Amino acid sequence: GMALGLWSCNPKDFTAPPANRISAEVLANLKPGAIFLLHSGVQPTLEALPEIVAGCRRHGYTFVTLSEMAAHSPELHDRMKVAAAGR
Image (cartoon, rainbow, N blue to C red; front, side):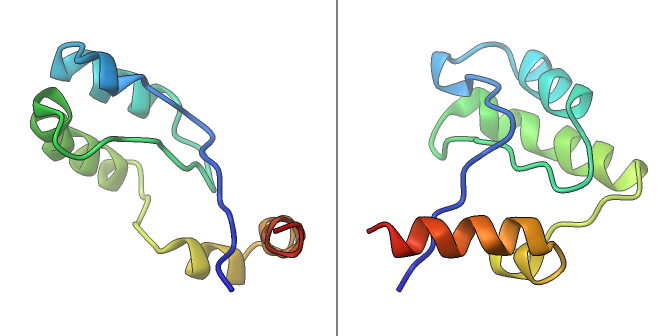
């Protein structure tokens, strides 16, 4: 079955703030294991993505799938198992 993974930061891009505010919120909340909730089809989000990706890379972060992240984080792996069992 599928597991549930929740975000650690919601920059509320669905309200369509300026792109620089979205990227600033994401970059201010960078930390190992961070998961950001961003919505597809929101123009300011699309405009913010190049700065978000560049900023993450400047700080040494890489992008992985949730499954890859869970493989390296026992805590996340356990939380995902519990969430999947509860369905």
